[in-house]
Length: 252
Image 1: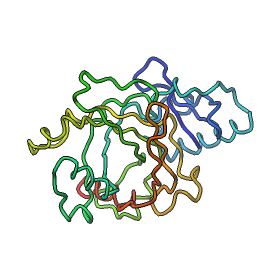
Image 2: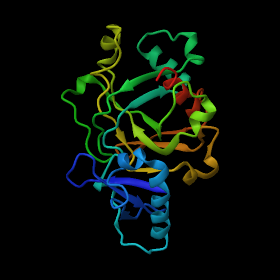
Image 3: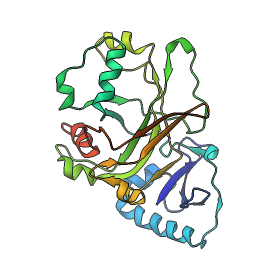
């Protein structure tokens, strides 16, 4: 099924189920008012949302047109946002660009940081910064939403915790990163709010493209309406999502 959060004037929006073609949606707030509420009781709520999704596919429930501009990020805010560098060759290139060497341990020990999750940008809203000199950069990434994950979980069991998959535009301020990391205390000002895709999908929606904790589909990135990148997401992924989640939960 496909889930989205529509703007309704509140911080957390209203949960809706979206049809296969992303053209119509139906109100799901009578089942769970928000996506976070659904995640908090996922085993009970998700079967009800699935039934609603099936009813939507048969035109058996009231619908409205689904417009991406009406959507917030699926989770407008979250209890945690962890960003892991699964593509180590990318990490190596970024570090070379700022004259930093990459430790060999990065190939075996995932690089991960806790980002700000108090607010996420709506997918079609503008990204505003005070200074262009801060070096506003975008990164197309794949994100997953998990349920509760136990401490010390194995990478195989960690995959079972994945409830939803979505895209993210991970915003960076490249002009601020070197000085901030030079303090030896990690990101803060240089990693502002990110924006997620209008819709989050359950892994079964991805078919054979979702396998072994990887999404083997092209990630299309456009800049100002022109093609910018067409990366195959399943290629050169050093760490799969199971490994990344297990890393995050090692001491959690």
